[in-house]
Amino acid sequence: MAISREKKEQIVAGYVELLSKSQAIVFTDFRGLTVSSVTQLRNDLRQIGGVFQIVKNTLFERALIEAGIPVPAEQLKGAVAVGYCLEEAPPVAKKLMDFVRESGDRLAIKGAIVGDSYLDADGVKGLAELPPREVLLAQLLGAVQGPASTLVSTVMAPMRDLVQVLHARSEQGNQEAA
Image 1 (spheres, one colour):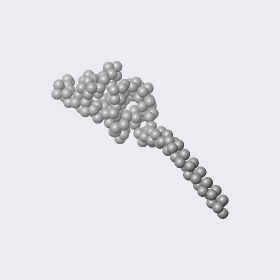
Image 2 (cartoon, rainbow, N blue to C red; image 1 turned 180 degrees about the horizontal axis):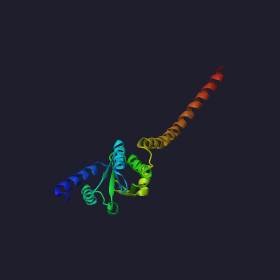
Image 3 (cartoon, rainbow, N blue to C red; image 1 turned 45 degrees about the vertical axis):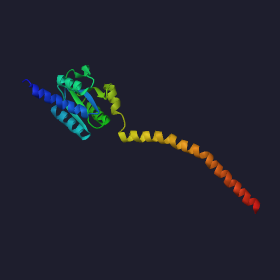
């Protein structure tokens, strides 16, 4: 049964809405997955701020163009499902990579778009291996705080040395007076 023009426009609008909310999108080939495993994956991704959706390639291509996202034509061939990263990208990518291992490679990662950059399957694997946001912020703070504390101690060293010399000199004067 053919899809009406109005229905197609609604589908494209739904894709555009999800694309506008996404930090990243991960392209997958879902052939070989059962309905129950797709449902399980959708539930798992929903818990971590993601959405898994099987897309119609021609309509999804229109949505990408409408959203101003570069169209990876090679990714829109065959059975395509998209993982939207509505919050942070690494947890969604990690969950998808874990699902690939658990499903016996029935789900295949094709690539991803993060911002305006395209990542291949290895890039998605690297994205999945990134530590959580809190850990990255702590590492950044440590990288900034280390040199700052060294600078403070370097600036304070002459003052501290001067105070020690003056204190020793005053004690020497007290000993001579006694």
